[in-house]
Length: 233
Image (cartoon, rainbow, N blue to C red; front, side, top):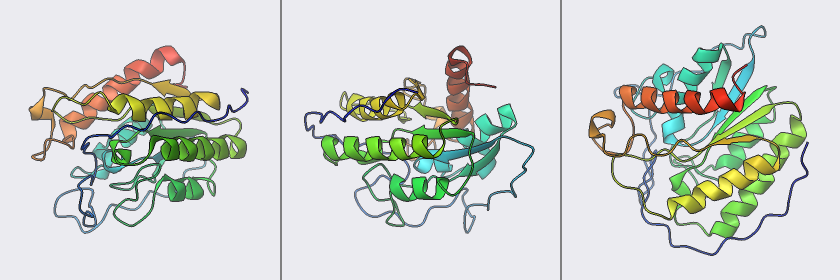
């Protein structure tokens, strides 16, 4: 297993407004997994016969605006027969607090109480206004804790999911931070590109969050990257 390397502070960049689950300047209201639903559906009881997977992320990983079973982590889990615990929180990031005041820190704390064989973790544009050095420090610490706790788990990171508009160049900074943190602990990092850019038909009315068809598109790209990486067993 590779040794964790010291985090290298990246030059501070003013990240432009990036939107992902609850990423507005104002604190978002409590999100729901589908319109008209009071709260996200509770996770199904764990099935010890199925490999366990946890998802750490923001509103797109959470499935804001779609049914819980339509969010991309649920689609990936179903594809492989994994039992999913989706810990994602709208508006959250490695440093940026989400709607309930928590960050990826609290999601990782919860993951540490479970026994995942797979860990899905998404880079997020919610860290847009945070200092890159702070995001780097958090990502390095959290990925290190996950690896120390679960030395045999397959950690799979992905680049941030963008909406239908053109992403700014600064999104590369967020992705690079997550990539280094994941690969430094022997995880697999998948560059999924921007499959939703230029496709408003795959987005909800806000132009930010994928609809059910958009989540299927994201999941397919992830699957396409997972197969050659050999992380689909």
